[in-house]
Length: 110
Picture (tube, rainbow, N blue to C red):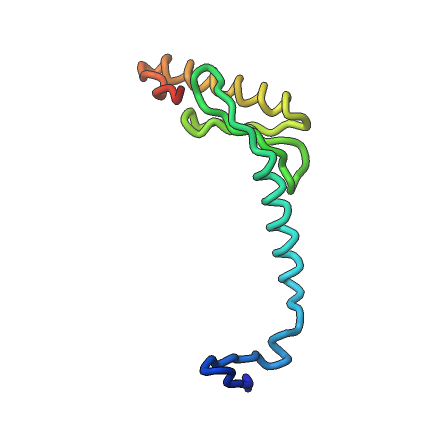
């Protein structure tokens, strides 16, 4: 049962001791959040052929990820340059494939 204490009109509720025990999953979650923050702080946004491309380190698998949301392309690589080269090639293939089908390319971001 939680304990209550009244202090100057304020009620302070202290959870039972069993609720204060560390959760084994919390450590995993904290590590995941930390890796996410590290990746987010290293996020780069570039303009490639008029489209925005995001590049960030892949904290889970290692290496890098490059993504162009507008053209709907993603690439991974061991290095930043490898991931960026992969997404550039995928973007060119996507735009070329759209043209072959008689569709216009996606509107440019920049």
